[in-house]
Length: 329
Image (cartoon, rainbow, N blue to C red; front, side, top):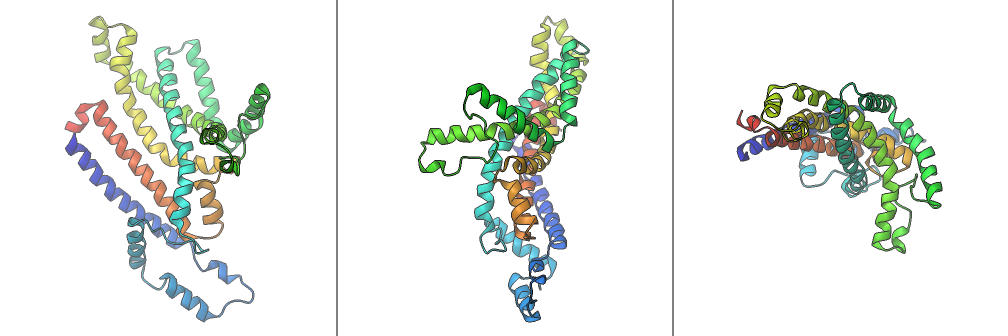
């Protein structure tokens, strides 16, 4: 198991290096750090642009620029924004804001996908299967921004009216200035109230597609020879499903979840816009793309790539845990 993990870890490092190279190449071809100066009136003299290119290292060849950027990233230096502030100082703070939404959404989506997928497979073509299938396909068909807007407009208002006070919040990740007078428990309760709707927006849409993979995998397992053997040995249907079937049926879901991480980051961008969260999504759109700030975009893309690679590494290790034959292959 240790040798298997080390092999996967080394492979992940090379994948991350390749990702960093592609990210830098795409951003270098798409963003011009001097673009905001071209429209100034009066236009700065050419000596200004020449000095700025030299200062930013734009006169170096591509590989030198990539190496300088990569060595800085390894030490935690993601460069500076066009306003002169370090990207790392802002990026990691925003990452914590977005991270708590994505992690909680993944946990909820995985649990719902397993439960609904197993129920749909065990009760195939029963009324409950048809109802769950209808709900799942309805969620799959909903655009992220529209579903988030529905939760914001109807669910929040209904819950708040039911309790007679504001329980679910629709704007921001925390009440502004709350830390000045509230206790730590009050701050966490406030953050939880802000977290519910954005998390549900991400989790329900992710769970919908994941549950179909889980249902299909469970159906394959239920028809396998070893499941029939387990029943023949006297195990009850429930025990055979939970002890022997579910473990093998989780392998395809593990793959899907690992590959879906990038989509969750994309969904978080839209969700943060709807709920006005100051997370990584808004940082990318408003501070990076809108301002033509290459270092902000580079930092966001590299952090996203890192978590995609990390989750795929975790998925590889989980394969070996769920099926020992994989680590022996």
